[in-house]
Image: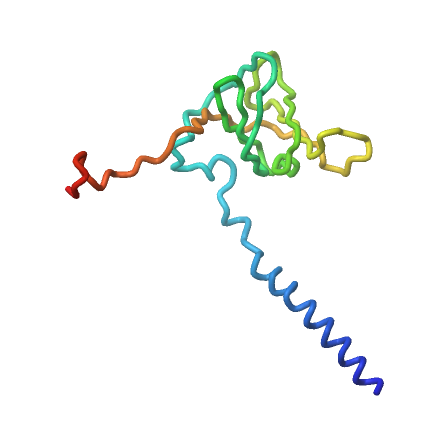
Length: 159
């Protein structure tokens, strides 16, 4: 009788652990194969020319599309993609962004300060806030879309 409950416990544990192990194996992807930095936007019509600096009237109006090494910021009506050197872990989940810059403009070598907390406190875990050095900056046009060839003529008939 002792072996039957032991067998059932092992069977239950195995049946609970198997889906977790399988999902861990199937969701693992090779991070080396993923494009990094500005390369992830190659061919994207929203990506514009590289700029030397981004000058702010006071602060940025907002930010979006954060990854470990890029962020899109908005200042007035202008949008920019900022690429950082290497991986900046808190940038991906940033709740706040700040800048350590010289003068009123952000340039290469200045820092983006990313924080994963809305209210910084001394109890934050390590790397919850981090300075990330700016590698490059590009204009960004959020309204640009890829053009698709017209399949019909103006009168609606196939050409």
